[in-house]
Length: 280
Image (cartoon, rainbow, N blue to C red; front, top):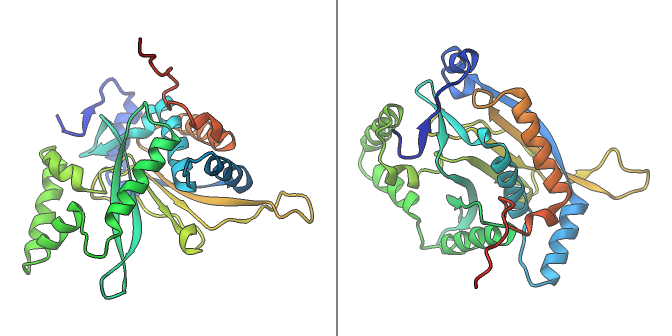
């Protein structure tokens, strides 16, 4: 058994056949555009900040995605070696920009793990803690350190990553390596709006287990708004592995995702919908 998931059995013949028909993740990628009502999200963010809570666009999107995924768990499945696995956790990978000691821009990739008892506030706090810890010019996270070691000796990187790929296919990649890898994730999300750039459709990596990639683009005028309105919406570029869920299952997931983005106040309590236990 893999350290990050459990083999799913009892699938229909067509679902079992799809990974053989489309053995590579890039074979099975579907692209879709979605849009977030910018006015609703910005109003929610401003209101929460007045109440003393720091909330961002990314934390709202991640919270809405995770809440929808808890209700539609197949979006947290992944394919490896033509087999379908149910992930035994939920995590999100994302890229941040930082500045090196010499002033040049740099990127690093972070990964956070979420829990059913999380809400938009704890998610926002966890994201910010990881960003603050990794924004230091001299700081390298464990993922960066691992990559630096791999590239320190000529030819070592090819051996290290080639071996990691094969071990992953066989289900033998150690949990410590999976925890370091941003490519072994439930969701990979990037915020191009933060650099004033339009959204793109970003591929899901063949290495690792990424099944869904969401790209946030800079807000644009809403073409459906009344004439003279300054209403905006944030476009999302979504790329997903069609092998992990059927069309109707994806449809239900995105309907829930959009519902929570339209009513972000639903993200202020436990995302699994359970009541907070009262201490006697």
